[in-house]
Length: 117
Image 1 (cartoon, rainbow, N blue to C red):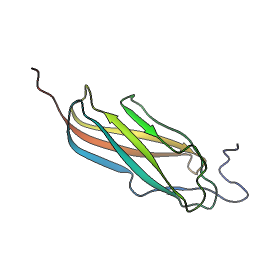
Image 2: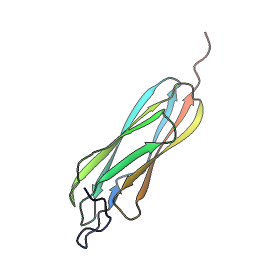
Image 3: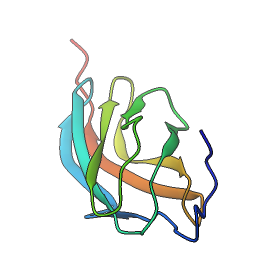
């Protein structure tokens, strides 16, 4: 399957309804999830080839099938706050057959340390 940006003169475009989600205050050790919704607002078929974060504590799940123009999809992010504290921001990089090829979404949280027992 080709991942060319322009297909027969048509270009896909990924448009997120929001690009940042703030979980607010969570407790250290909490595992939280959030789903980012997007639309293929271009006129070509959209194919997401990869989504990743720099840390294994942040795991994205994305659609592997083609998203036709006008169709919606989502990317679900799971964040494990174990061993983290304070204000954190995690960036998820999305690679697709769009222009530009790379898009990013972010999650934020203020992680409250669990007191030692």
